[in-house]
Image 1 (tube, rainbow, N blue to C red):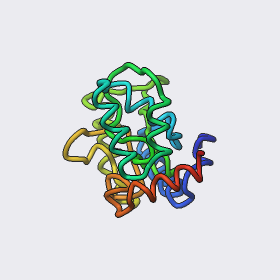
Image 2 (image 1 turned 120 degrees about the vertical axis):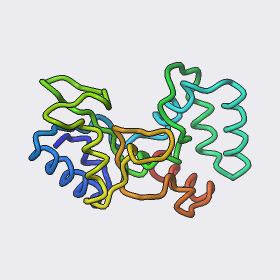
Image 3 (image 1 turned 180 degrees about the vertical axis):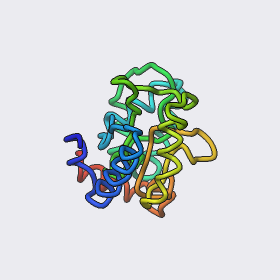
Length: 179
């Protein structure tokens, strides 16, 4: 397994490795492309598809919830461009908690990103989504909106806020881990 897995929550890492090994046994080779992501990386990914007005509003929202570290991180990310990648602000993705990973499907030695391509009767991302629950994981391919096929995470809750944490609690933890 990749060294990037060393930074993951140990329970999540164990389950993720078991899932990927089970898929590998079925000749579906998925590899981790991203595991732990810093709030700074998350801020850049979130900003790259947002307007200036959306960014200003998000910074104000974070500050109003006492999340000054997260707001400052989002502000410091600067100008970013690119396609939409995430709906999660810094600190609000399980990637920052070491409880999420993004995978790519390896086909004939190359990364395959298609969710419609079928090899040996199956698609790697669909297999990941089908099998994740068997290992106590939640797959982004099973989300009702904004399907994130390469994504798998430990918790069923969409974010730390959905898990009952406040913005202030999340901010304190992000500052502790990454500040």
